[in-house]
Image (cartoon, one colour):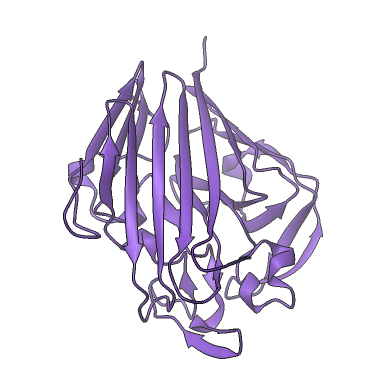
Length: 292
């Protein structure tokens, strides 16, 4: 399946394998509308026709950076750049541009799909790039892969990741191993990292909006219905557990938020990508039912 224009709006894509069903909305930021095991939502899920925006989706891509980019400006290779407001009344721009752009369907089968995005460079992100997301579904595993290629004439900073939302059920429990956690200022920008031994608790008792290091991209989620194991190629996890919301987030990402403003962005995961070069990542979610 192909389209004629670089980012033509595409209809919903539905994948099925065994008890799993994955619904995609390419036109809403290349997002996952829903993921179900039989009738149970694995991620926070909506039928694709009912999904109004990528921010309400089950998961959306983070490209070409994750988290907050401080005060919508940065300096790169001797030049000053700005970005645009894209998230409520935050003083920062958040999560890059890919989650707010239509993707096209480059290929699809009954159990797999590839979505593609071409970004020419604009006021929201000054550098041109292209991106692909590949989704593959088996009877008990969802695998997501992402490739981002620098199509600009000069090197550019690129980060990537995913922003999954999970339903907060009465017995939802999260296990994450880590060595360090980033503290933040009142606007949400990271300030310093402190030792942290990890998370192993009921989600109802947690109140995090932090980036964790040393997790190896692994997390376990369990409730009265489902048992999940998330792994990825990415070195950081952002954990967001708002106490008054019916969801929580466990986000594999390649870099610490606002790394571009740190003294050594590469040390905090932000890649400098040469023209025509690319960066890649994968996320894998193993999904099982809780018996008894």
